[in-house]
Length: 342
Image 1 (cartoon, helix red, strand yellow):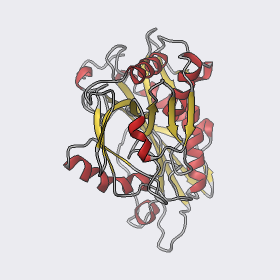
Image 2 (cartoon, rainbow, N blue to C red):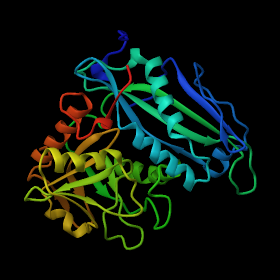
Image 3 (cartoon, rainbow, N blue to C red):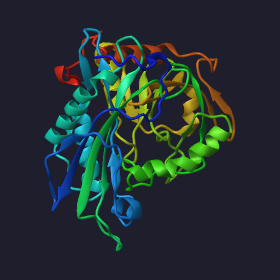
Image 4 (cartoon, helix red, strand yellow):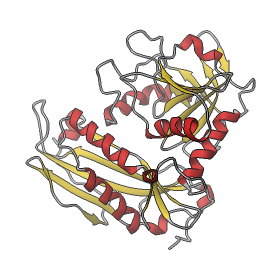
């Protein structure tokens, strides 16, 4: 049932309360059965582990109204796997895949009126997260944890939709070698906030973070992976143990190779070779793909497509194809890519 009080075409990427959210508690290393509730607030002890030692992780995925009118979610099993991997690294009892997928299904169904109609370019964003909820003072893992999944209708992550953005190379590091860069821990994003504030103050939408060890290789942005296109239309993405394994990036590489017929490669990419690429984009759940028109470095401005206001043809094709799969307009490479909910 459509919620007629929402202006779907003018949605931003901001929090808004919807009807139901899923909650579950973990005690003695075991997750208890979850349930739907209406209250969006959480009451915790002032010494809860999430406050003291940032023991928290999250995921992000979207529900869409497909062309056939069904409400679907894109590859939620991979989000469940990534959250389990993050839990293991942060000493949080792993959330079972079945519980994660059940929470997704229950929350989408309970908030079905907030799923934007087909053709609006909007979606229902799902935010699952886990926090250490029991009090700690000594540096240690919590004994209890709180899992929630809430939903909200959203529009484009960057203003302007599929329009090129300008970014800059950051002087700060996002993640250290052998650190937590490859998991979706909340602390990784806290690390990027100050750098993001400085970039936006200078007129840039995002940062390009380099490897912390040598500061010569491209890693990722504050909230997205990079994807580059060579002049002969080869798709290249950075490879590093401190990059978050983006589900969107992995999906785009499959789409590029198996559906569109492009050659793809994952490898280390030096900053000094970025100017040789024809196109650049940021990819992730929130943005899908945001074309990059300009990258500011200390030495020069790197402009793609010969015009920083132009969306490259390959980036545009990748975007349209992946969105087409998500919306049921194009057949996916495998049946498990699109999960029907309602």
